[in-house]
Amino acid sequence: MKKVKIVAVTLLLILGILSGCSGTAQEKTSGTPNGKIRIGVIYQNLQNEYIVGLQDSIRKYAKASGVDLIESDGEGKAENQINQVENLINQQVDAIILNPADKNGSAPVVEQAAAAKIPIITVLAVVSNEEKATAHVGSDDVEAGKIEMKHVAELLSGKGTIAIIHGPNGNSAEVNRTEGNKEVLKDYPNIKVAAEQTANWSREEALALTENWLQSQKLDAIVAQNDEMALGAIKALSAAGKLKDTKVIGIDGIPDAFNSIQSGDLTATVFQDVDSQGKMAVEVAQKAAKGEKVTKENMVPFQLVKKDNLDKFKNK
Image 1: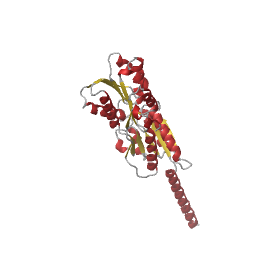
Image 2: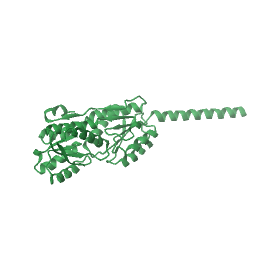
Image 3: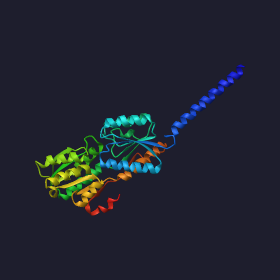
């Protein structure tokens, strides 16, 4: 009788262990009930047209690849992104794409994902602990800053008075584009920076900022670190009747910027290929989710866009 009981208990234990192992394996291999990979995406701020373009690209390529997305909008605040990554970790996503709002403030997002052993891919901007991220997808913002300032310097024949409209202070794109701007200015001592201030990537803030500047000074050029702010500056210049006297350049290559170049208002932009960035982010996140080896740095080059080469970029 004792032997029968021992055998029965042993069988139950074995079945329990096998059942537990089976459950664990299923958790690791199926992000969703249908077995699809689930990727969490945390955007910087969906009030920004370029970030909306990034979302469109990520959605398009995720759908084509059969990937399920869980998306969140940080609304420009690092603290929102920190809360959002906790939610994604609780949902046991297979990978995370982070578009950081702030270089330092968004760094805990990477820490949390790494601690949860979830691959995390930063896109467009970087964080201060970038070495802990699985990979990065973006473009060289220092180079973008150099390209736009070099073009302005050439247009002004190396002398004049300019203003710089910065992105959000502390955002890695702002930091790096400023570095690129200032690196070029070292070679042009006769270009004076009369004013520089952040407009937080915002068209409306850049409009108000430029209106204030125009009350006290004449500007030969305005160098804006994204197109939204460049377009805000153009609106202020136009209202003041000074657009013909001031060159304006931006970065990103959003549709509104292309239209403004076509109409002769915006002087130029530095094109950032958002479609390629979104596609690459999805591809890298998928590979990482599957445990495959990924390239740490995945960069898409910037390109200067003017009226004479606009047609090459309009349908990208």
